[in-house]
Length: 159
Image (cartoon, rainbow, N blue to C red; front, side, top):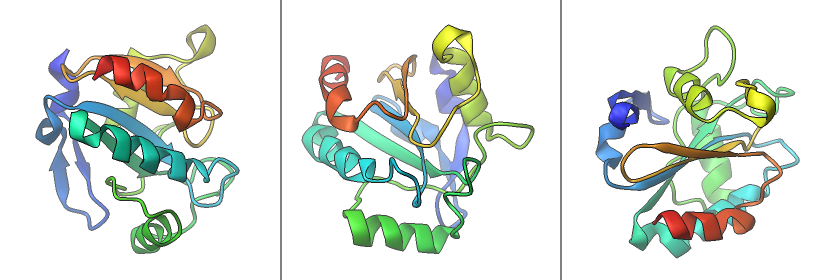
């Protein structure tokens, strides 16, 4: 169950971030994009973060350009967009691939642990969300059209 804590990711400056740093926290891991129809979900994610951060929620956002080229910017521009336009305070990490041969190992693990509808592994679009318990168990995958405010009650139960 604790396998998720074996992964290391990179922050927006390219520094290694061990997921072990988040042990004991409930995680919501999301692939994001700045030019997507779902981009306004940043606002809802920030509200979730504000509501549940003190109770142990950490949101980890990973920009991805695999869906319609909707995240063309570099890490620095993505950071400016997220903080400037949506006031994002949760970590927006380094840009990754979530599908294919170059997919980040973390996302391969998440897809294996929480397949989509009919057991599909591939992530279908931006703003797919994975909920991970404070024990490190991948509990659920939420679709891109599952709005943050709609999943708040499920997060609350896990906290």
